[in-house]
Length: 143
Image (cartoon, rainbow, N blue to C red; front, side, top):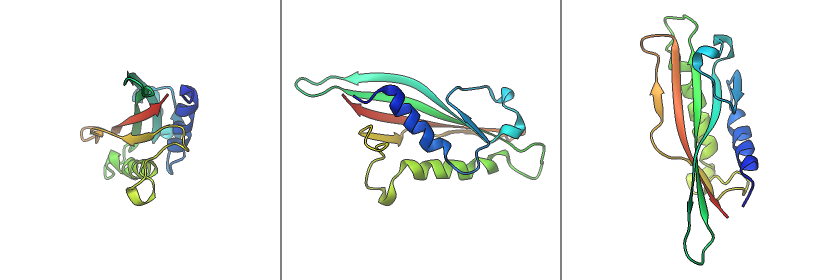
């Protein structure tokens, strides 16, 4: 099995390369600790790992992670806080869905597949200047 750290470094490098980010890290911070000037910001958070064991077949690991995005409109009342995050979410979705939408994203062959799986959670900042997006990822890693 590919080392976990190699997988998560590769995933992070892929998503951190999207256009428009001002900061990114694998260490989650509370949005109040990320200066407005450093947003839009992206964080990769490792969540859970589980193993599926089938007799006479290699174990398949399932890793779950979240991409957490923060965006701030810096007091511009005419600008929705999500405006800075929507194009970033679109680009992340495109990076995780290879051309043609038929093949799987394999992070260069390190995993069987890496995909967005589940609801993308959003808080559009309707009552303030801060927007938040959480994108759930699932990675399937054969041993």
